[in-house]
Length: 350
Image (cartoon, rainbow, N blue to C red; front, side, top):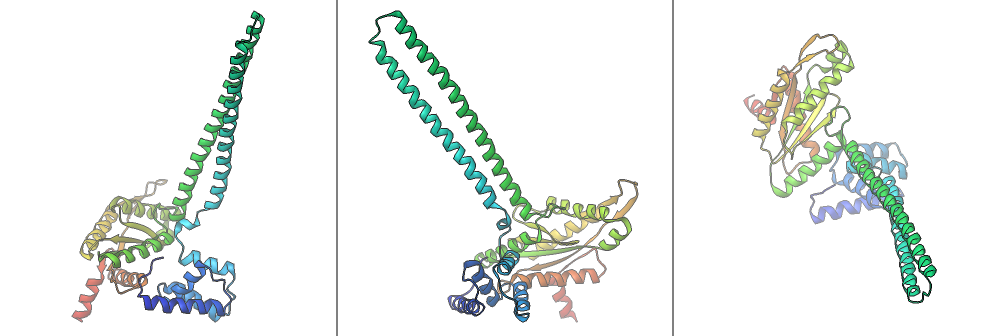
């Protein structure tokens, strides 16, 4: 996790974190320090709320408890990948490769000695039978060398294939750790990570950053009326539209249930509003059809809240303002885009 604090602030937070860990007999390792530093800095209101609840309940901060908090609020999605298991398999395969290469070296050395010996014996032969014997020995050793080389080559090919498979497994595990299985979008953990990263980049570069939060209208009614299979199809459709609409630097995520979120780095709020409206219109034009019955289920709509990042705020505050805009869109009749700018104008008008 990145932080944007002055030296004095960082020193104060670090001192408070160390004191708290000493008070509660918490092992002073980097992950635990990150938890309490974040707690005192207020970077993550959700983490602070969780830790306050544990403190109020006089919970013991065991290694398992600390690890659970770190995984939930501070770890990168990729840290969930079982890299140690893949690394163990890789060590086995590399050992096999080294053993095969070592054997190849021994085979070559033995063959070289055979040839040197045969060369020396050629100068000493007196009878044709001796020459025949030398030739036979060389031929036998040559055949053996070919067989041994083939075995080494086979082992190397097997190990290369295994290593390639391990690489694929690691890539697959990484994707699964970051992806919502139903929609193929980023999951909530990846969203939190990307938003933290984007807000920090925005603070450092001064580039704009916008956030969309989208909520499918009347989704519970769809589930109740047509079943969860149809509901899943609606969620997948939303995922497809978001993936087809966004550009490479943006991150679309399933925020939870029927809610989605889009992180838009280097995007002014005006352009974010246009993009939100484009997404809304694309979804509204789609008509859902029950494949089993052929029944037309009508169109599905979405409400969207839009907010722009302020470099003086925390990521949670940006989410809260986008949420307020979303609720205004829902309360205003749904199937519409509302921005925080619009809410400010309404407030001023009142």
